[in-house]
Length: 338
Image (cartoon, rainbow, N blue to C red):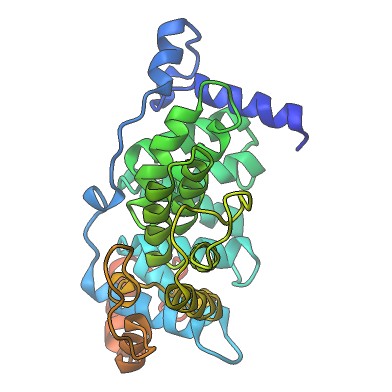
């Protein structure tokens, strides 16, 4: 997409309110209303997860992320049955397998759109975000950028951190959109969105608000961002103010720099496993706090190593959950009505 088209898309975006039925209005009041943003957290409205479905989801996730050869159709089987019982995480992972061609489907586009529509009806913010991308790409639906942008905004308003981050990147390119951009990045960052926190810290850094920027980088590291850890490592090496890329107004501190460097390496190595650093403030608290003793270990890693591998779900459970939703328990696909 060229620059002009990107800007047009972004401008269209801000003209659409968070409610889809406002898409045709073009007066000044609608534009002003469209630009408003109130931070909502996704966790406040997500539906409860069926615990039996969660057993299947977790085993499917284990099969998907374990080392070695993978049978993605088997993974999809567990996700399908779990998603049929309202498991939104399983639905998201299943969509990824189908859209990337990793798992077989009798009609991948139809199955994907039916999934996203089901979870929009359940009020899952991320489902609106997914539909935005399908509309943007014309996957399973007619391509429509304007509708896609409306869905992205709807998802952001409902609390999807992914949508808030995505929308913020669009608004940052539009004159008059930076205030809402900052609000959305802030909202996503405090929901644990690592990239949003890193972008917000960078934006704040450019305004020379170094103390706040360092705090937001710390939040990004907590959410698992290795790049933010690398940046703080460089900052605590004590570069001069002229070295704007890494200068953050902190005093040189070799031990802090070394710890952030080790953290960055750890997060990068385990990135594909979804590594986080909830204990960041116990390892390297921000100044003026003194550095505590540290044995070089990470809470996330210790917890992962201590967790028992999930057991294969009982066939009786799989068959019962499948029967409840009229699914073939061997594939998770709907049984033929004929």
